[in-house]
Image (cartoon, rainbow, N blue to C red):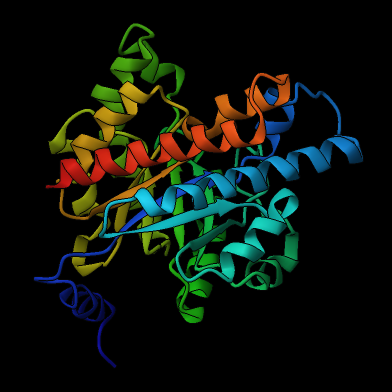
Length: 317
């Protein structure tokens, strides 16, 4: 049997000399944050509130569809949505060859990864025929070693399953600052992002890889320096691996997101983004408070998404 490292090198060689297709995901898989921050709930939503959340997920998807005619060539639009509130757009996206469907496997709002549907996660992950099963994890080399290993082992199980099923698995990696990390930068979170987080991200990636986490795509927090993006992209492909990276949005202002996209876009190994709230949060606030109707909200979502796609494509050159 061919060694794993050689198989990965062969897989990677398929990309040599080829312009990779880009992936531009509009993320709408938030659950707890929508309930608590957009709907201001401190309890389980009523059936009417659940229906409203579901309707707004569909509205965001329709905003994505509205954007399609104006997008530059060379990229694949994607939609990341949950089963709980987003079953309708998930079905529509799965049936639309223009859209790459991504769906989360993780339970929402957890400090450490856990499955949204327990032992039935495989059935749920397969049901809609998503192109990209996805998990969100938080990791930092300074966190509890046993919990880190247990989390990595769970995600490695999904990674192996996705490879067997021919699914392009996405791992969204957040690297939160510890108190010690913040103390090194006098509590300045911008300095943490710029000076400390890149090294920690490389370490976390290596740890996860060493525990069998081998996604097709790493969803990475934005970076201020090209050299950091290059190091992280190289780590995703170390020892012949074929991992790629996309930039996540983190609900950043447009100016900040534009900077992150311009840094990552020219770097080999970065192939797009997955941006959520920066596309649709204000539009849904307007829809809920009555200042926007459905058409205006969809138009705003389409404009924001198109802006980020064009920013990335223009920066890639």
